[in-house]
Every structure is written in C-alpha cells, then in structure tokens.
Length: 269
Image (tube, rainbow, N blue to C red; front, side, top):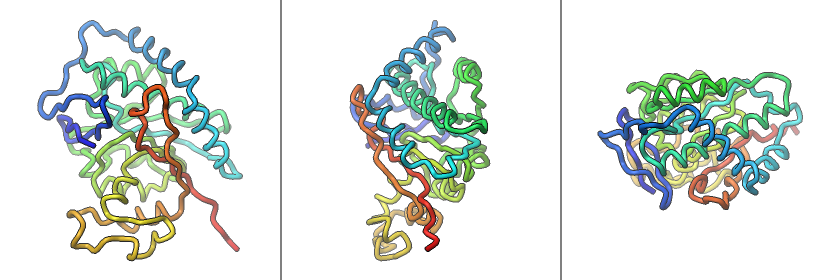
C-alpha cells in the first residue's frame, strides 16, 4: 500500500494496480476539453455499473439488516477526499468517480428509509471549479479543505459535520492520529472507510472484545510515534459491529480494504 501526497497535505492511500501517479508538488492540471456534460455522462455510466453490481446488493443488504429498530435517523452524509473528477489523470478519475457513485447511491438508499432529509457534504482539497459545478448539480455542499485541514492535523471543516447522526465515507485516506480521534469522537452512526482499521493494524490491536484492555496492544515502545490508539478510537470499535466491504467484481481494487462500521444496540440487561 502506498501513498499519494497531494499538494496541500492530504494523502490518498493507493490500492493495487490502478494507483494514480504520485503528485507531490505537481498536481495534475484540469483535463483540457472536459465539460460538465462529460462528467454527468460519466456519473450516469458509473451509476449503471454500480447499480447492477453484486457489491451494491450486498452492502445494501448489510445496511438493511443492521438498521437500528428506530431507523438510522441520519441528518448528514459526509464524503472525505474523493480526489478530483476532472484532472488529467484517467485512472484517478475513474476510481474517484466510482467511489463517489457508491457513496452517493448508498446515501440515497438510506434517505429512502427515513422521512428526515440527509444533507450531503464533500470535502477534497483538489476540487476544480468543474468538480464543484458537478457536485452542486447533485445538491452537494462542498466543504473547505485548505492547507490547515490536512488530515494529519485534523479533519478541518468536516469535523463539525461528523456527529452521531452522520454517515461518513472515506476511501483510503492516510488520516493521522488527530483525525482518527476526531472521527471517533464524532461518533457517527455509520462509517465506511479504511483509516480506523489501518490504525488498529499498525498499533497491534488484536480484537474488538479486548477494546478496553492493554493486552490487545503492543508495548508502547513497539509503536510508531503517535500510533497508539486513543480511548476514543478504542471505544469507537468496541461499540460497533463491522464487515468488510463486499467485493466489487467489476474492479476489486476500488473498494478492497474498506470496512463498514455501525453502532451495536446497547445491552441494558
């Protein structure tokens, strides 16, 4: 697994053979000739591909089965770091659009299960004006992601929208310990991503049943600086059930490594 460091601090963790090139100081420019209509057609094409996939059927089945008795009761859906849909990098654009399509479709499905409106947000430092136009057409509010919101320093504006009534989606972002802590403290009702599992892995966390026990961790000396799980992140895992993201047969690398987390009912017995 490698990382693609973007120009203002965000890092996209790449997966498999479809990795985008590294843009450490040279961010790919917007693709010349690409129009809003092109993006809409690509969105519709990817939506049809996702809509007929076994991956979609499987994840919606999981969410329906794990829905709380009182319903999800969501008010917000936050997608972190989709990457740009319009820069001159074909592989990155294809991957980003498919991940966005999945998030958007899952959100619409969750919306169909409740009466209350779910406001959709997206945060990505490398959006172009065309990206923003495309998202606005979907009634998505774009959050600011300036230099000071680099994920190793925190989640920035997105933090205020990660609440117990939120659905959070982040695909392979290299979030630092502060960002993972903010995500955990936000206590979202539903989370699909890779960062929590990655932090548990590098810290030697052995299982959710040991979430409150130091026996599930390596010694502090064995861990990278800042890699120790915080109480918030341990509590996040201890109170949630999880599944791996179902395999997307059409292109397995796009979602491979994501996990689905939902709050488990509190045992009051």
